[in-house]
Amino acid sequence: MENLDGTVLVTAVPSIAGDFNVASADVNITMTAYLVTVAMCIPLSGWLTERFGDRRIFCTAIAVFTLASGLCALSPDLTLLTMSRILQGIGGAMMVPVGRLVVLRSTEKKDLLRAIAFLTWPALLAPVIAPLVGGVLTAYLSWHWIFLINIPLGAVAFRAAARMVPLRAPAAHTGLDWVGFGCSSAAIGALVIGLELLSAGAGAGASGGGADGTGGALLSAAVGLLVFAAVIGGLGIRWMRHRPRSLFDLSTFTVRTFRASNAGGFIFRIAISSAPFLLPLLFQDGYGWDPVRSGLMVAAVFVGNIGIKPATTPLIRRLGFKSVLLLAIFGSAATFVVCAVMPAVTAEPLIFILLVVSGAFRSIGFTAYNSIQFADIGPEKMNSANALSATISQLGAGLGIAVGALAVRVGAGLGNGGAAGTVFAFGSDPLMKYRVAFLAMAVLVLLCSIDTVRLPAGAAAHVSGPRTKG
Image (cartoon, rainbow, N blue to C red; front, top):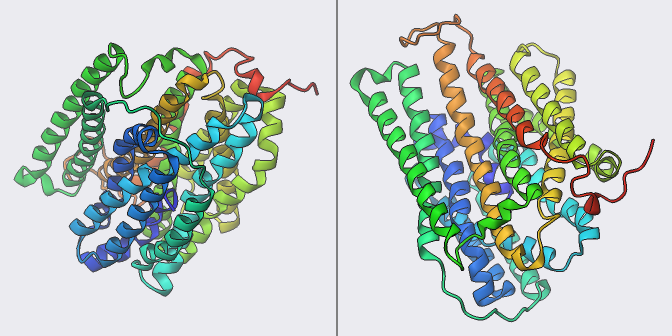
């Protein structure tokens, strides 16, 4: 439920925008607010789990998430929907990290690759089937059912969690690092809101709406928030580096495999997470498809995930983590470039094949990054490393939508022939905003290789197992 609700609204955006009488691009705030709330609150999950125990926190998270889903369905406007999504994000922040921590605590290093492969499934599955699920529910029922369906699912999940999640005694009481939590949450919130305002300012300028100063004001506010995010984030890092029991144990970044996975992997997740947001918009707004047709085509990414999954672990064992990560990086960048240049008249079977290939590279990259990050982390640092990794991953997913929306709005200014006074003029091309967005994501993916190429050839070999010879 948590992974699905991050992007399930994509194909329902036009319907929600129509009901609330707002622009379609404005609805992306509901997805960003949810993902960012999860990222801001995940640091609390580790402390809450240690303080109150796995089962209690997990069951509470499911209850909050389910209640918030009902409130989302009842929301009469975009403001209340966004607020309900924030509450939903608070519940989501406590679900996934706690579940993963339970698995990591009981898994030996030799079994880590297989365990992570199972844990990766929801993150791979949900974003690509979400457009189809959202499209079907929106077309045949209404967008409200996207949230109503969580109520029976949440009830079943709550009962299952109460019976299956181990009852572990809480650890000795330790105080929460409120300074570290405040700084990290403020930095994350300011970063994403700043990007949202930057996107809105670019959109106002591209549409000619900046004549009244609105665009300039939004851009000024965005710059201010981004600067604030950098300053408060820097102060938080300095605080946590010199505090014995800080919110995050930043010494985990001295572990090369963890650092590479959460630096290059962060950029990889931003770019890859933008695809389930950009593709439905391209198909519906650019190609004129209906939500169901769009959702079915995006589901081709999941076909690629399934098709390559049996080969992912053998591929890592044969080539090693470094080679597999580079393969995923360059392969993903290539598929973004093809998405950027293909014309609207491209045959659907060819688009389907492209998205299948894209899904395969996506699956390989996620599995490799998720497996290598805990390869050299000891049990004593696992809780902090898990919370830090979960925060970075969720922030990457949230920024994927924000950065994707920003790229679309910048591209809109380039595709209107300079009518809005832009410096660049490419002529009237209705698909230019999506071409720019996909090319930007391709460049972003390629940046991941900077950290990856520095990994030794035999990085995390004790996790991947002995390399087989061809």
